Amino acid sequence: MQWMRGERIPPVPNLPFTAKVELETVDQIPDGTFITHKTYNIDARDSLGRTRIEARRWMNPDTDVEPQLLRILLYDPSTRTRNVMFLLFHVVRRWMPAAPFPGELNTAAPNKPAVSRENLGADTMEGLPVRGSRVRETYEPGALGSNRALTIVTENWYSDDLKINLLTKRTDPRFGVQTVRVTNLVRAEPEASLFALPADYRVVNETPAQQNANDSFGFPDSDLPSSPGVARAGVNGIGIPVCLYCPAPDYTDEARAAKLSGSIILEAVVTPEGRAENISVVKGHSLGMGLDESAIQTVAEWRFTPALGPDGKPVAVLVPLEVTFRIK
Image (cartoon, rainbow, N blue to C red; front, top):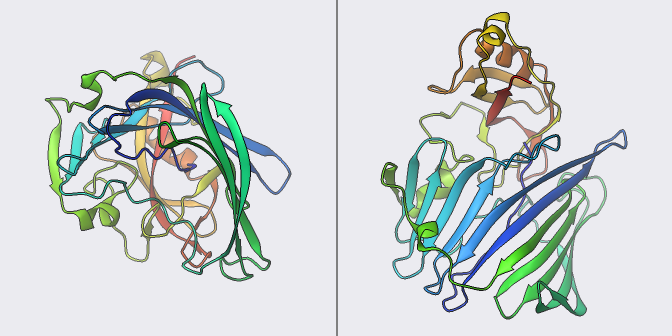
């Protein structure tokens, strides 16, 4: 699993648009190998200032299949209502009233860095004028668990016409280079259906305080229970483990004969050493025919870069994992 920030869209009225937001993360592991992940989201804002922000899985580089849509965040500034649609579960989690922006993952320790800013001048992107800036955040040795000073560099190209960044490039030694680029920009009123909730989704009302306490990659709390001494990945300053060695599971003869394809969703504890333990199938997300057992055995062999806590040290975290079986 690899996490990165997407596009932040303020709920500004009278500046409607729809755009494809391309995300790319490039990380270098210790042996010098570069690991690249890509995906995209279709984001929008209407004339009322309502916003729609998608979250999709990483794309499979071997296919042209559209990346699976996991969740959609809808915000209505007139009612200060935030609805988060979880497509895997047909559930909507609702916060009302809610702050305009969802909480972002705090990957840094609370220690304040030394900050410097640089003006990069003007340019044009997607036919719009943009102005660039570069921010360097330097943390003292030990502040993030490192034995040397650590610098995070963020480059933004901001459009005053739309009040969003059309390009963001973040270089963090812990997570590699992450790029968010707005493309296929259409400055017109988006379809009203993009901001509507499906009639068959169950709505769960939350208090604002529950958002950061309960949110876990779009998986309802009943599916990922808390475990003693184990943190939730991506919550309250806890990082997210990244799978470095992820072999595909073996088909069973029975499943292959039946041409059974699909995905199994597991929950696992990724230890500070980067191993998956306490692996089990999330209720309602199994395939049977021996594939559940094959998935569990395979994930036990996976190796991760561990999640880091707010102090920069590895911690055990509970995470959801998807294992896909597909007949070729």
